[in-house]
Amino acid sequence: MGHLCCVTRPAERTLRFLPGSSPGTADVRFADGRPFHHLDLTSGHHVADHPCAADLHRGEFTVRDAHHRRSVRWVGGPAKDLVLTTGYAREG
Picture 1 (cartoon, rainbow, N blue to C red):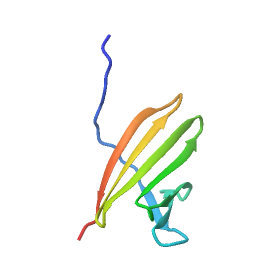
Picture 2 (picture 1 turned 90 degrees about the horizontal axis):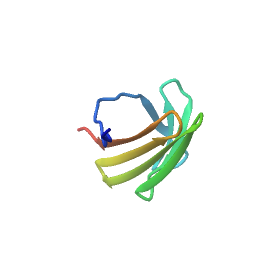
Picture 3 (picture 1 turned 135 degrees about the horizontal axis):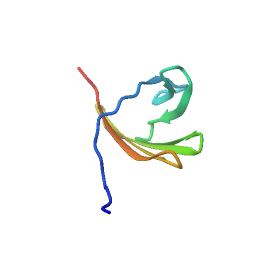
Picture 4 (picture 1 turned 60 degrees about the horizontal axis):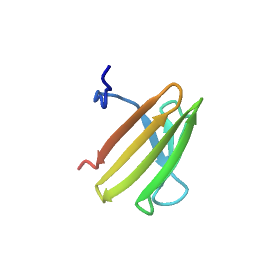
């Protein structure tokens, strides 16, 4: 049986990025207000972990320039095994 390397499909999730305690930081929360993780982009790069039952979400965030950033999330454990890559661009 062959091994499926990659599957690309649409996905959607709402996260709220609230201002953190200092410039360049944010408090990331799920849409229902539960905490997800802290985000600190002051150095241009940040890694954040979020345990989810027996699975682990690890996000790596990189600032490319003043208008673009990228996140790569690895999700692994008994219930999940995936990589989510997202590019962000400032509008306007």
